[in-house]
Image (cartoon, protein in one colour):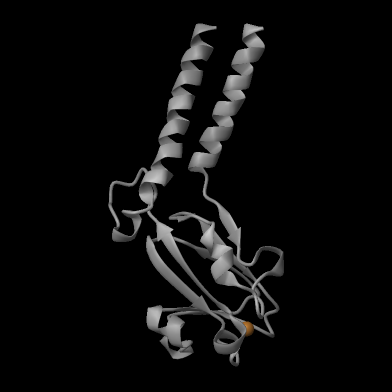
Length: 163
Ligand SMILES: [Cu+2]
């Protein structure tokens, strides 16, 4: 009984650790991909983006593209502010720095008229010492599960040693 119990704790520990440490991959728009008339603002609201995570833009490369722009370029759909245009049709973007990130489609009026624009806020990794102004309001709920994960891990390890 005690052995199976510790096995369960061990498994739970692995799961918690894996989810708290591993980077996530976000498919922009999920099954819809990067396309016309999708509400990317709604798509992003319930997601927490952390440095090390990746964004994947899936689309027909003949129809759309992905431009990284600044806040003004995002608001006004100005593709000339782009500091990089991605056109592969399956663009993988590694989120390497915290802060606001803006993406638009630079084809036709897809950004202005068809909602092909995405803005996200990338939070620093919880273990990283460097603070970020954007993280101050949201970091507590992010830190709690991670700390909890490590406490569970420690607790599980101690139990395993004792059994
Ligand atoms: Cu487009």
